Length: 69
Image 1 (cartoon, rainbow, N blue to C red):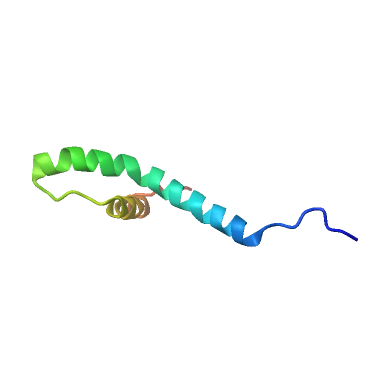
Image 2: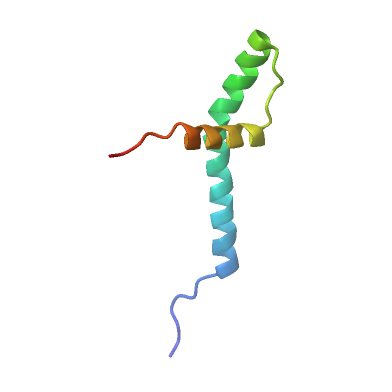
């Protein structure tokens, strides 16, 4: 009996990691761009890295998440 489809496990894992990375980048990109454009000029605060923007976005989502009742 010959198997017709055998998934390529390393390839699937690599593609999954790639899509997670791209999604995280797209999630953080607006905050990163707006912060680095506005905040240093107005308040004199430092610019963010893309990782900082992602983590700040994640933290804000945790802190300000609405309560579903």
